[in-house]
Length: 383
Picture (cartoon, rainbow, N blue to C red):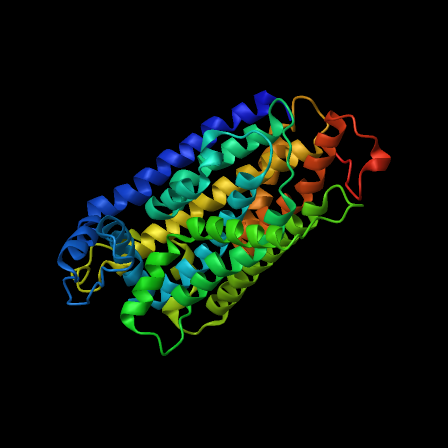
């Protein structure tokens, strides 16, 4: 894919970002939910008396920052079953997204400064709204891999091997404790898990560093006969996270489809309805309906961004025309991938594409380095 095709993605990604800022943060500001979050953080409780526990690390500045996030997520998970399921479905894909970003940060080649500081970027993405920051990350990824020179896509073997257990501890375990906590968990403990859930990108980075260092001390080395020994671990991580997000999404999707409870129907989960907001009991319900409206638009905009990214990535992988696919072909693929993201989850769809892309990135780099094909170990040479 030429630089022109990558550049052409800039405008649609920018449009999605602007729409996201208006529909997400703009919406919270205008309906009172934004102010309620900060008031609850300041007072230590919501207007209905529900308590907000504000000590997580013992460092006031960090705790206050995390408490604002808890004041957003606690009503979503506690007040309405619809918001809990919607957020659980959405955040299953966000665990995959955080993992994709972790992989990109660990690659050996040169990378944009944002990719070098991805834990901070992912924290902002989770903190302010995924759909606001996700399009720019997708654009950087496309520009990095498909525009101009070829960068070394390999990851240190011990880092690649350490990533899956790090993801399980930092992302998947916190996801379970936040959205499906055991019955014995107390309110302060649950709010603490919500707070630490926001720190997942930093925790993942720290665990990878610790485990890979421990393996290095033990003297573990990659298999000598395999040049791309790290690729198996990277692809396995893509597969596991894609499967996780897909299963979580489909189970919730099926539950809503078969439920006799009208408050858990597909339209209730997926279709934004502004008439249910601004109710007289909004403060008493801790703005649960307003948060549901936020999550619904967040999901819609994430699907749009993922569909565009998936289409451009597939174009870079398989399109042999210098000018890229035609508008009809590209539009059709955006529609197909968008539907797939809605049904089986953005996390599953994009993880599958990145799984397929991994061998292609390595084959392209090998060719760039003039490595004979016979010396490559099981790496596809598709373009």
